[in-house]
Length: 197
Ligand code: SF4
Ligand code: SF4
Image 1 (cartoon, helix red, strand yellow):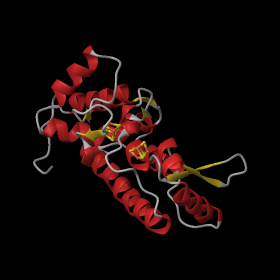
Image 2 (cartoon, protein in one colour):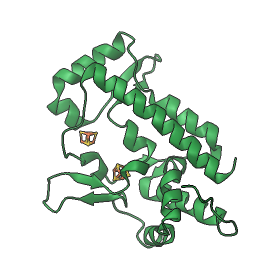
Image 3 (cartoon, helix red, strand yellow):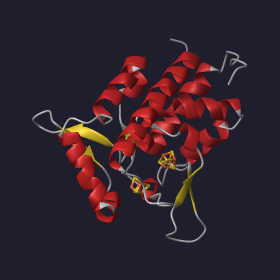
């Protein structure tokens, strides 16, 4: 599969996830706290390079890929490079790459993982658990009674089917984005990108 088709395939997975998350949220009222962004502040977010291939591709089309790549190579640790905190400390955060954020950013908080017996269990953040206990109880019941919920495992399997190499390793988010940029920059080093974005 050529790189452009991989980007589109990942975007299709994201669109499907968006619908599943919306259905789950409608059924349970589970949602983020307004202006929170705490999960983006975590220094230990892990992701696969493939889930950031659309971001890398769109940065490349905007002539920003090399600058992002150089910066990520210079600074190996720190927060996600797309995270742009509010000026007021503690007020939350913004994502500078919201439309092209990764799978982990889309699924975190509103999905289920399988327990040892293979039963789906709600996987959400501490903030939601503490601030929205009623919605968490409703979501837990919804899942227990067989209601629809995005399964994290299924989405990572879908990414693996698109590109085993780029989706086969979970790396610190900065490394994952750097590898995605590396893949796009290497691919287009001797090729012209498509005109369509
Ligand atoms: S998932 Fe949790 S920590 Fe992240 S923005 Fe939503 S409420 Fe905040
Ligand atoms: S890409 Fe955006 S949503 Fe994902 S961790 Fe970075 S700042 Fe947060």
